[in-house]
Image (cartoon, rainbow, N blue to C red; front, side, top):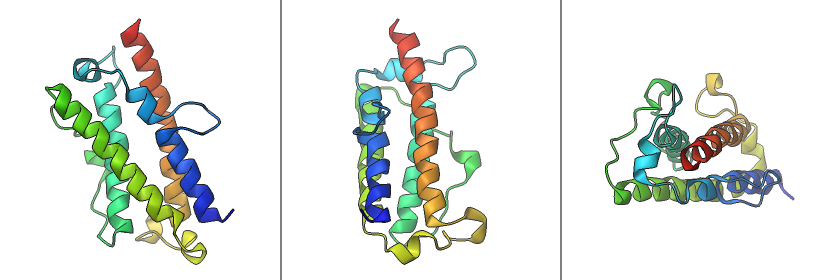
Length: 154
């Protein structure tokens, strides 16, 4: 399997399933109400904040793959919108999943020669670094979401 196809498969796995962790963002976000998503347990981030944070990086990197400049900044990655209805929550989640699939499609066709080339600027590493970084980053926050969901549902 080509590296680009393998990366896209791992990327899809953390968002949609089929990975060896048997956990994915889509499934974890199911059956979480907008009210639960907004709840903050002790000193943790809310599920809303974590979900937005994951989506923030997906949308920013997707724009680069679509030929636009990189405009996201870490300091804004938790600045989520106020969610006050099921429709707003479901729409935000669906947008993140749609963007994840769009990015996976771009990754899948990324030429081998470009995978290890610079992503925007040397300080951001390579395309490979950013793709694997997003996968690892999403798994990290996915674990937090899973724990918060268990707390909220218990």
